[in-house]
Amino acid sequence: MADETERRRPNILVTGTPGVGKTAKQQQQQCLRKDLCYDGHDDALDTHILDEDKLLDLMEAMFQKCAADNIGIVADYHSCELFPERWFDLILVLRANTTILFDRLTERGYNDNKRSENMEAEIMQVVLDEARESYDVDIVQELPSNTKEDMEANVERCRAWAEQWVKDNT
Image 1 (cartoon, helix red, strand yellow):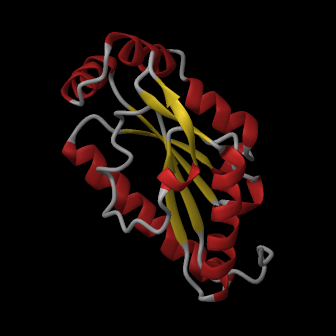
Image 2 (cartoon, rainbow, N blue to C red):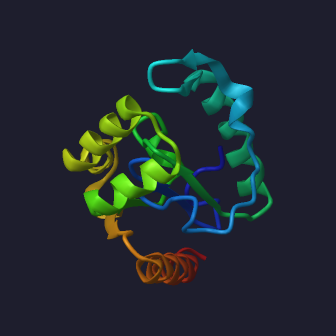
Image 3 (cartoon, one colour):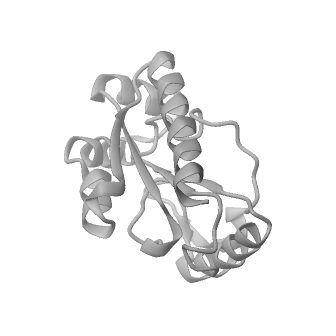
């Protein structure tokens, strides 16, 4: 991948427990089909099993192409520890009030096991702790994502940060 000094646009990872508003936070242009990276299904949690090596190989190529084309990346995923630190300039960890999160997961039709596991992860701030352990704490930002207004403010913060990054790095 182009090293950090060659990139002219920042890469941002939006992460958080499922249901906190990662996908709702941004207009999504799907560049990568995660289903190409599935390696089975977990029936108890009603979720696909990800082949992390396949995902990372596909993403590495995407990051290289985007860097060469002067395009920054905003990626979203419910975890962050599997991604190389060199890929991202900002990690946004979205958090939600557990009452709101419970309702969102219920609306999605999550079964009891899956909903309980995700609720516990949010209560124990698993994703935030992962981010702080996996990346320089200076690039990890915790943001509330309870309301539409929170989400809009987060998009604006992200936009302003990216603009400043470009000014500071070009």
